[in-house]
Image 1 (cartoon, rainbow over the protein chains, first blue to last red):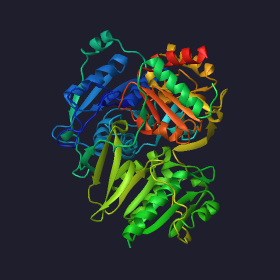
Image 2: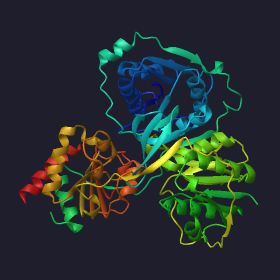
Image 3: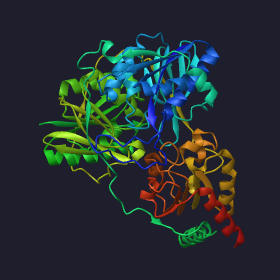
Image 4: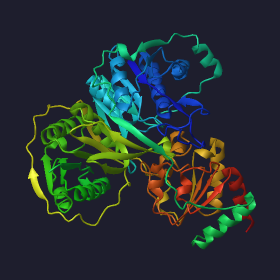
Length: 259
Length: 323
């Protein structure tokens, strides 16, 4: 199966204090490391596992600057066959424009299956996959947490809220947005990434994709980023571990739970 | 009069809570701005659901067709794209749910109208909507505006808007005629499965000892399980622990897992993503332990401890064992 996977390099923000920068249109990113978007890690793993089962070719695609090629190197190290970076140039694409650009590139690569993550860790729009599918004229499903190739298509499970899954059958070619937990992404060694550093990454200029003025017009304009409004918040328990444990036990008993 | 359209969401013939949340917010906007309010129902047999929506909007537009019985993004998209193109509503609200996440982007591309997803608030400024979104896992909020368009598409986060008792409408129910749709969707619905049943029922526990990403290693899980056992509590967890296959899904608290209501919820190394927090809104008291003093869990917890969870687990075990 020929599979294209769209991935994104995002700032790693767990256990980090984030603040808007001076423009208030972005956050301060100068000291943040970048990683592959968590959902995309599962998407690329799923693609590679499918290829291992059925044969075929895995192409990883990202939209980003040269420094974002890191995320493609990681895909290559995991086992992707080929990597393409779309250079946005002076354009500042929002999610809708990103979908237009990625769809235009995917059109040029043979594919039976296109995978994306459900959403990205940074802006959490969750629209790039399904918007690409519409542009490519492909059937699609979001929040996919199970995938099995069958004759002429795939059987999938879709994670719904409230502890239910939906199963569906989708004909190929198709686009699926992959949910975390669908597989166990493989470990990538430093050596693996170093070896992947020698592989060629194809670069495509966004301005050469033949997109119309409408295609590259952002749907949304960020007006301001701000810190979450203050809430009363938790009463913080102070002291060493033993003293904190004592306070926790006291609170639990006060609330009517016998220990 | 400009119109707000809300797309009702249902599963197995029952309206989902998000429908009422959207309609409550929509009726507030409609009354403030003197907009007309329409709720659109697509289903196999919508009669009962339509009746439940009577006081929630000025009209219920119902499409009945067996192809609409279960959510199908292609049929729903084509039906709604026709309706939206014809009525040109000022605003269309959908849920930011697995349904809406499929449907809304498809509609945006098909109609050419701009879409903002996962919104926690909708503001009106000079006759145009603006939205508040939470980005970077809720650590930052963003106010966003739309490019000018005849219609604005918005998906709403579950739980963002409270449900009002009644919106005071007497809806006219309109049975819309079906547009011509393709005979066969390329995505075929097979069925629903329950994924949260298992050996442990976390919804019945008085004390939940819940573990999140901060536990670090799979090897540390039994350690937390021992604490839960010593305290007579039940072990639960947040999504990343299930994603890593460290605990089975029936331990998971949150929108895709279970909604719980223990007397005490002890959250260990759980950052507090909104999907998790939505699952513990019924907890009596929340005590959170996290290394990150800015973790969103501290915004909803009653008590907090900034510490490594393993040190607190060890101290708690000692304390409880000693008694």
